Image (cartoon, rainbow over all chains, first blue to last red; front, top):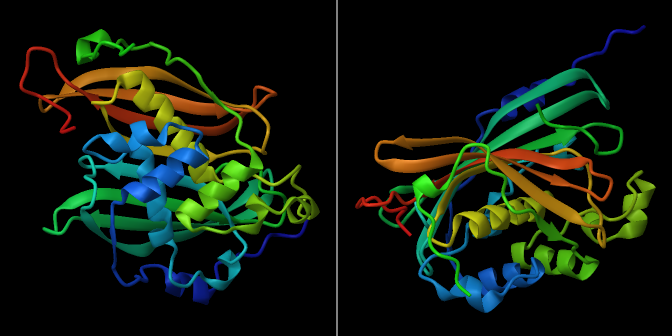
Length: 151
Length: 151
């Protein structure tokens, strides 16, 4: 059996630690209404209170895309997500997120064979610079159908 | 009818959360894509998804994470704060098929004056296969205490 060759190229290794420019956005009721409708939930009830629902963090996704995915990960699939909320998010507050490629690694011998993973991390602060949330996302790249669990 | 508020000592290790079933239509996925402004073709292009070996277009992972957040919030109550939620996407889910979200309390502890519940969460497809697996920590209020979740 031919030994598997590492796919961790110098380009990929160099991407570890790369950062994207901070992005600022507002916790918006209208976005929450649209998310609620997509989830088949009561949009009025969801947006009635003082705080955004926990699933609002999904809306950060727009702000989370890495500025430039290393070549092999264009066409990769999402393998996992992690969220930490340090406090509830208030409507109309301004949040700034900054992200970086935390790690790129590979695994041999999984169900879909050799797989590359990229872990991307974000930190979010409020307008006072206080941390409000953290997130990380694992992208995977393999040749077979996306049927693999992230480690 | 409004459910009475539950406090930390109302929850127990081993408690199973009432399951939450969703059956998202393709239109909901399109709404989700619009609300999060993420347009990944396999989320709405059935032909493309099938050409890649998938059974149909697929439900976005973060949308399934949002279902798990709803499961937790409904169970713990509107005042509870979902402090963390992490999941790996193990298998694709497809439109018009049931996604049933489950959870079980694995640990209940008071830490630094906060009532914390660790919960194993997962989603199953119509074949009973786990398509998402993860864990969450939920903060709930302590009875007879000034402690609140901040909500």
